[in-house]
Image 1 (cartoon, each protein chain N blue to C red):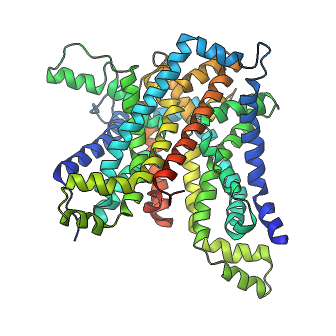
Image 2 (image 1 turned 90 degrees about the horizontal axis):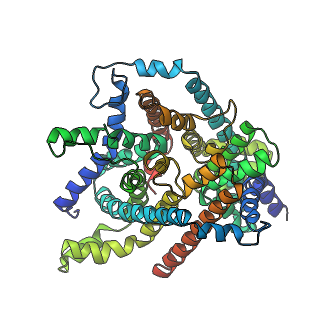
Image 3 (image 1 turned 90 degrees about the vertical axis):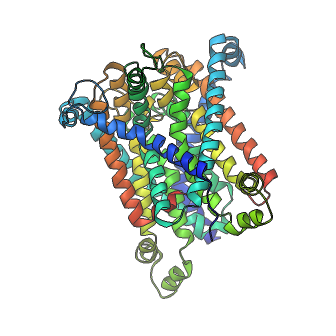
Length: 262
Length: 275
């Protein structure tokens, strides 16, 4: 038998969910409006503001950069994050406890401080090109997700299977790819997709690491809003929401969305 | 010995990335503020002498504290309902919290720009209702920044707390009720104390997030409601005052670290089983 929930509490929850969904519904409505200004409910339905995104070079360019950076940063973070997560699980007793804290640091240090410091010391101080610095910054901010999600997958992996394969003569690296990796596949996919969307949505690190020809979509949105107040941003927002929906579908397939609620 | 080496070898690339591109640059930013020719603490003396910058620091703290408090209350009550909701409806409620969380900060702040603007939806609605003839100024006020920040962080709080609250067995709540406690008393004396570790984790996440935010205060607060994040950006990218920007960065890091350490200590004291 379950404890009944008091009615006022249910009413409150409904209101909070309306508060959470309302603004996003408004953005979708505004994106579909046929007017040249932002309005809700939409007046006349049209997709012209979606076409407009791709007519504007600044948006085309920053969408490409954002996707490139997100893809490369996530791939790099997985490339170094999977071995780290493996080491943290497999060789836990031989490694100091502070090591896992190190991989959480990018979440602990304020992103805006990281962005500014990368500009100051790495881009300007060491003359690294802006694109490369931006990539490093994004790799750092998605690394904790990769290590954590892959670690969670490895925690339920039975390492004796791996030992069995090795004792039967399979070389360690081959064992990793044929035995371990297939078993943590869903964790790796979920990590990829969560890291990807984190990178695409990032503002605070990218803020300082934009230069001639290099900018990301969120930074371009901020710059556009400062000058114009038209439905283009609403339609870009809808595109980003579609990306979110895709991400959620993938996470649901691999780990189940309840994974995110813990 | 080889085992030990294998562990280090595999974690080395990630360790190097964090050491070279996070610890060193952020350390250098903070260290540089103490190397000013004017004196060791000169940038900090300048910061705290300026009434404007003191006001910015104070405003940032105020916004972060109010946002954290509101998100805690709202998140806790909603998470309790979600954690006691059966099956399918529960999944829908979780999805409805995850969706905004995965939708970027810029998109979610922009939504409030449409709602709170002078010719925005809320003002049009109020005029239509006959509440007012002249639109209210809602944008670029502290209230608009707080509303948008609460909007930003409530989903995070719900998702952090649902897991914790689900860990509280239903039997415990029923036992409390069968011993004569009113629902309110059960909530206060049974559910709340058991949720404290989760509440602390949530509070730390929301406080540090809102204390160091940039996009939301920039869009909804503008220059009028400058906070540390927007001040850092303005110092670095508009005024090219790198010492000033570094000082703001150092203050942000110190406050964040103090809050994280302080709250972890509180969490340990309240619940020795928690980390």
